Length: 222
Image (cartoon, rainbow, N blue to C red; front, top):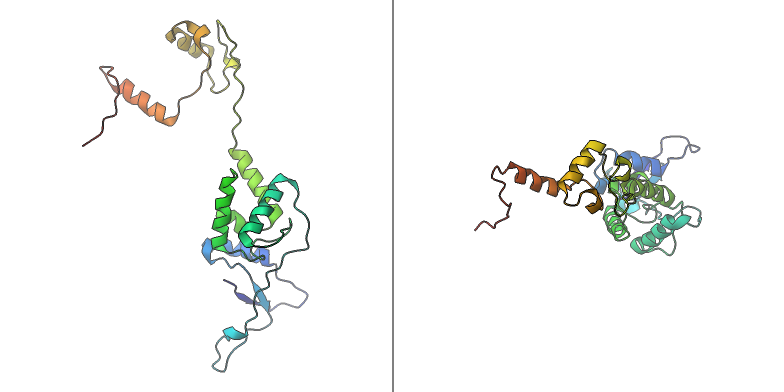
């Protein structure tokens, strides 16, 4: 989709295509956001007063002045863009849509990001289509999603586990003593303490709900 926009302002006032595209993405579904925008002084009309589509100029798919990508994320993104868009090189200030990108290619791009362990909503690409800006969003988003597992601070043969030794869950000293008393061998037989996953919580709930303390089994229903 490449709409034409009439410029009713003075020739000194330039329409920011990237800003206009980002604004449109706030109101239109992703597939309706134009991949290129052509600015014209007037719309060509045919003899019937309708838009003469054949006289409309083709959109120019050109990038900005080339500046090499910086950093691992920008360099990797540039390689992905080159593959998806079929262009020889991509600079850090190049615009995905001005290089020929559109909504279908945007989905293809996001799929390739997943192979690198990255994720981003398609709307981010429409709002920040420049390589450097998109790379910054990728870094920020995936940094927030990254969870670093802290080291285990319970030493081998520990006879009394302290709250500061437990790094994956917050427990009081009394709660830790209750756990130690329920484990054969006490604290010396505990390597680490961590919270249950949601599925494990569900299994424990049904186990405690069983008044007769029967073993919980999953049986297929014929």
